[in-house]
Structures are given as C-alpha cells and as structure tokens.
Length: 197
Image 1 (cartoon, rainbow, N blue to C red):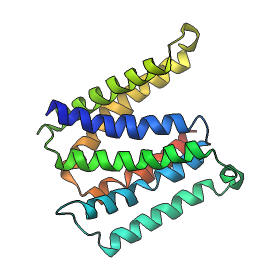
Image 2 (image 1 turned 90 degrees about the vertical axis):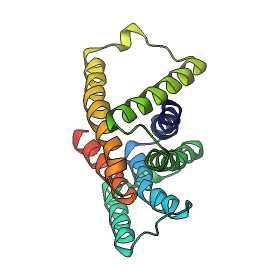
Image 3 (image 1 turned 180 degrees about the horizontal axis):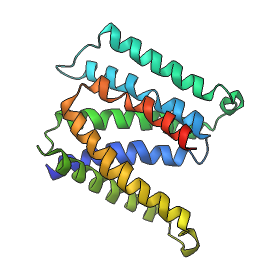
Image 4 (image 1 turned 180 degrees about the vertical axis):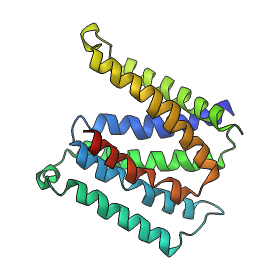
C-alpha cells in the first residue's frame, strides 16, 4: 500500500502539480487554468479506455463542455495571454493534466490504503519526497530572505487548506464518487484562484 500510495502521489503531485508549478513560471496563470480545465476530459477518456472502464454518459460530456466554456470565460478579459505561449510550458501543462488524471484513476482502482486519510498521507509523502529530490537535482535552495511573513503565511495556508483539508477530501472522494464527477474540481480551483488573486 505504501508503494502504491507513493506511486499515485508521484504521478499526481510531482507529475501533475509539479509540472504546473514549473509551467506557471513561463505562462500566465489564467492560461494555465485553461489547460487544467482539460483534466475532466482526460479522466473521462482514460476511465473509458481502461480495462472494464465506464463510457461517460451524454450528461457527463455536457458537463465537461460547460466547464471548459467557463474556463474560457475566465481568460476572455486577457486574450493576449494566449499569444505565442512557450511550447515547453504548454507541453508541461498538457502532461500535468494527463498525470493528474492517471494518478487519480490509479488511486481509485490501484488498491490504496482503505483509510482515506492514510491513503492521502502516503500519496502526499511519496509526491513530496520525490519533489524534494527533483528540487535537489535542479539545485534549488531555500534562502533566508525568501522566508518573509507573506511567504510563511502562504505556506501555512497551503499546508492546512491545500493539503490537510483539500487533498484529504480529494482522497476520500476518489473512492466515494465517480471519476468524472471528482475531476470537476479542475473547474472549481481556477475560479477560487481568480477570486483570491
């Protein structure tokens, strides 16, 4: 269970979130949000394609389309943001959505720990350790001047609400809901991000 949980975490958190974090150093966040909105489509297609998969109902396709239109509305005020995007960042965003969808489906069907909190802890630890290794290989370091009150507050917020609350709830929903319904979190997160921004 630890190995499966760590693998799911590496795919979702390092592949999904890690690639988004890197790509957002080269793309505006509203463009990145538009790419993230493709996650429900990835989930629906991958869940359908897997052995014993479930074909999405027309209502699911309609919901995915409505969410994608909503994401397009979010970037409408800044159409210049789509002009000449960095190809490597675009590729990273496409791969990140695919990684998050793959990891989510693996977490649902891959025999994770039966307790959702333990499953999410295994996934976060696996993904976190892997991201620390990537940061070390890239030569990334924490500098004392970067540890501002604002940065520590953001870190605390993300630790409590982004990890302990949201990701733990996500790990529970992976088992309690359908993959297509679960993936609609990709439509909610950008709206929250725009509101907080």
